[in-house]
Image (cartoon, rainbow, N blue to C red; front, top):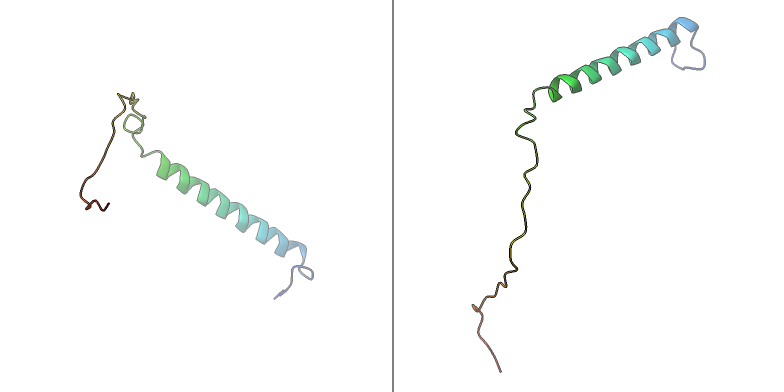
Length: 65
């Protein structure tokens, strides 16, 4: 068993590359499958126009002079 990539032979490097490619394909497929379930009509942004300015005040505190 090779415990270092420096002393590994060609077949060990090939196995590592194959495992990395398969893992990348699996993650990509999972991401695509999770994304295709989104209803794009529901995610569209609705345009909201600004109205007139409003001043908000509060008089809950006691006034000290």
